[in-house]
Length: 192
Image (tube, rainbow, N blue to C red):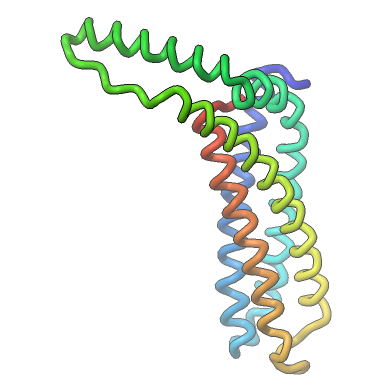
């Protein structure tokens, strides 16, 4: 298990790699769309972006897996799946907001119901599992896309498989977008 400081720096790196992967995969979908519909001079760029997407996916995946034992103990078990920790954390937060409101002579904001927070934290842990499976699927689909791109040239081979190629790229981009959204929402609830 990583120390808290190392895990936080790895989380920053993981996030940066994930954002770059989302951008590159989205870019790849747009370039592939143009490539399969007639802009044949883009083959080298499309293949290069395909490899960049895979490299970024794998790097983010490795960082995430290196950080996962720390996340599992420090965040998931100790907070997201622990109703008492969520309730206790919310109670402490409400007390501090009350002190600040009293000091500033304002009315404290109404806190959300603790049951709702407990359910959201547990749902976040569930969605985190879903995200991990979809990210792994996205890596395999990206490898399949690269294999197709290695042998397929639309000008030479026709565009009959263009919808499949575009679907592969879209699946990869969507898995990365899902991973980014779930990762950010989980970190917004509790991060390493």
